[in-house]
Image (cartoon, rainbow, N blue to C red; front, top):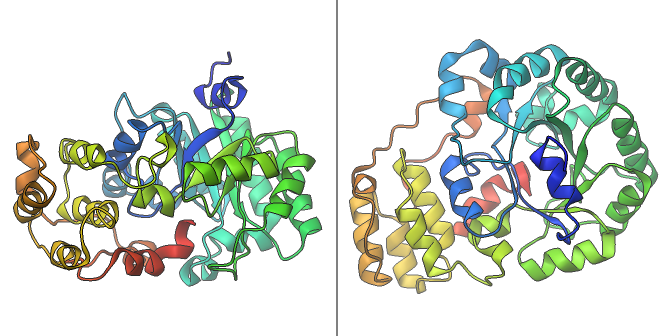
Length: 350
């Protein structure tokens, strides 16, 4: 046993692999993390938080990060384009998490234009400086990690991961597609090469839509962590072996204390995709109040014993200004199908 619960997960001889929830803009917030921890998810990431905003704005700190004593182990992911912001934000959040992660995979245009996310893959010296500078300031019992995408060549991808390993990272998460790829199958061969070429744990990200997918990819690549985004968003019981969202997960979701109707509803749209017939889904997706959403589920799925405060949720989003926050603004209603929501944000996390 070490003094870090994240490393303990990777060292646990009884685990075939560590089950990980991806950092998902808007979605991997505290309430969702609470839910998936009930269904055998071992390790959770927060949504990406902009490091500069987190340092400068108390409003951003309050809005972008919430946790509680049961929300562990937890990795906080930051978007940063320089070590100063990354170190300062990490030191502020350090008491409330088990590690921090640098986003080097976001392919959104605004991120590339401003030097964040996948743009850092073209500037590996910034990645290495961020990790080295933080390692000099961060407690040894906290992990430092990097999440990145593949480069357009296997050898380049392996070399980059080896360079990052040399800076002192605790583990690496690799999304198995390049920046330009969207729906192509992940490159398991390259992930296998990376895993065999570094000594730190590697978490595989991409195309894990079921527990059987995770087992198959682990068997082929040898990666010590399996990270799901779309799969676990549609099915919070994925890592517990459920093929579709268990009705118990919907019940649990309705009994977790929520603070925002839009996120509360969006998650239910994903979860109920295979629990409701098509005509019912269309009606459900267009509901505009929490009371109507809950009444609908009580009628259609025979849900009962709902936390009373969830019936009166408001729609206020809060947040801060800036390109990042403008890009993740949520519409007032969900009038389209879950796959449309996923397609609109697919490159952000899976």
